[in-house]
Image 1: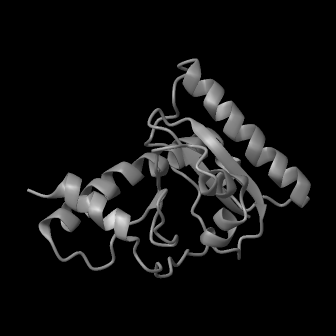
Image 2: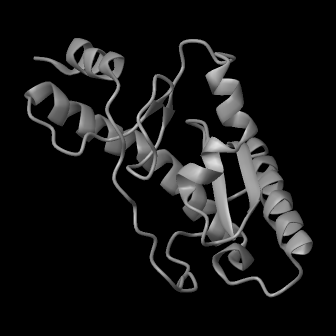
Length: 169
């Protein structure tokens, strides 16, 4: 199953979608999500999501630049990588706390979805109540199959302007 997760800076899940088969492309999941619809409607105002290169760059979803040409664009990519690391840490913490998430779950799809959603809620409860994280040295089961991030679409002019405004020397 391919899971879409959005977290905040405190490593709390803000949005989890667990209903797509593993073969579903990340952008397809997002494009068909309630979160995307809410972003399209401007519900979150002047806030952005950070995505990897599997997603198109939009006015509300910032992705890395494939071929940065200026100092500002390189700085943007560096800041993007550091910021996007937050979701990687959140997923890593979640998988260490609930190792079943790292494995191919061999139960009915509906049960798998319930496990994913329940453990993401439990993850948030643990974070909010300062319940000790699992030691990062704990060995994780190896995931099978690599995800290949496909190229992104046309870069949005307003995003380029934002990069030049905030990441120029």
